[in-house]
Structures are given as C-alpha cells and as structure tokens.
Image (cartoon, rainbow, N blue to C red; front, side):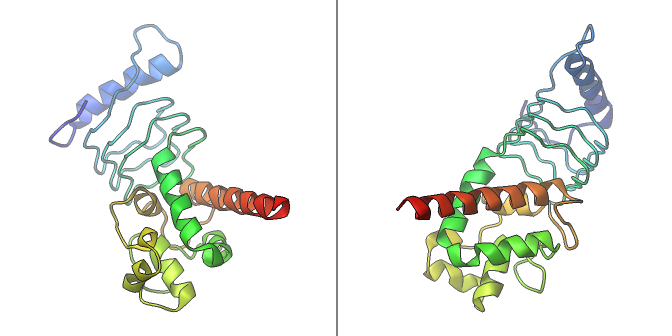
Length: 206
C-alpha cells in the first residue's frame, strides 16, 4: 500500500490492532500490508508486527523499541534513525542489506576483524562518515587510515552511498549501541561471524 503522505495515527492504530488479532489467531484480524507506507517518527513501541509486510516502508526515526518484527518483510525499508532497541528481528527479511553487506566485506577482507571489534565495542555511528565512531564505510576508511571518499579507488563496492541497503541498515546503529543492546548491531555481528567462518572453511579446503 504505497502512500504519498505520512500515515495518520488513527489509521495506523487500526491497522496494527487488526494485525495483532491476525497474528494471535483472533477473529476479525487482518495481516498488515504497509509496503511503501510513510511511517516516519511513528510510535510502534512494543507493537506486534510478526510477518507484517513493510517492504519499502519509510521508518525513519520510528520508535520500534520492543516491537515484535519476527519474520517481517523489511526488504527496502528505510530504517534510518529508527529506535530498534530490544526489538525482535528473528527471521526478518533483510536480504537486500545482507547481500550488500557481504559485497562490502569481500571488498575489504583485511578490515573485517576490526569492523567486528568496532561493532562489539559500540564504536559505530551509522549517521556519519567521519569521526571516532562512524558508519560502515567510514569505519573501514578509519582502519585503512584514508579519507572515506578515496575507498572507491580500490573497489567500487566501497563507494560511499547512504542509499545502499547495507548503509541504510547501519543507520539504525548509533554510538554506544552494542549487540547486547541493539538488535541491528547483533544482526551485523552475526553476519560478520558467519562470513568469517565461511572464509575460514574455504581456506581450509583449498
């Protein structure tokens, strides 16, 4: 349900209540189809969004703390600035971000361990390219000791682009967010560990 304007609070509440009933198997429920919906700044704290369709939804600065997003369809969703603390994202469809992230890891294998350390220590700020705590591409640039704008010279996959899926996902991580306190940081950590294990296995079998 693509929309050109921000969704009204009353309409969103109605959709969420119908979806809660649907998710709980109650009579009169209806699965939430919020694809393309403008939900900027929406208060979705603790909302039941299990298997909700949120593809391409704009969730900038939305309050999703404690929301149940298990198996939700989030491909293309804009999560910049969203509060995802304690949100449950198990099984959520983040394939676009995962595939894009893996391309970046493959283009910067020497920096992967350092990136993992930065994630674990809460030294990621997805909203900026420069500084002690910065975004995905900015963190890789810091480890190489170069300007982030120069990374594309070594690989097109390292070109700064805040609209690409991996960088959009990182926008949900701010300074101090660690895997234990931020669900996106946890997902990113798990993806890195998975990638490292695959590389180690490939190296052992070659």
